[in-house]
Image (tube, rainbow, N blue to C red; front, side, top):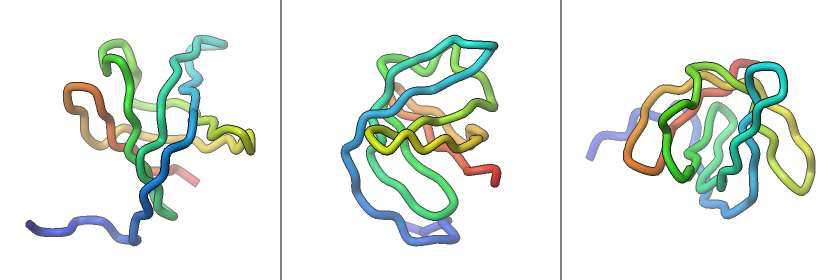
Length: 81
């Protein structure tokens, strides 16, 4: 399998929130994380916009993101910082 990531990822299991549209939120789980992006587990990727802010709990880290892939219950994001 080819690796397309520019930074190594680390497995993680942290709560997160997807913020968009002036206050809308969707709960998620951060499954892995790197300096450049993350994989998020969601109940459904339907309705999640292409760009949003990810809040990683419990540290309340806010990161602007862009969706780069979508699967059944997961989405991959690139950090736009």
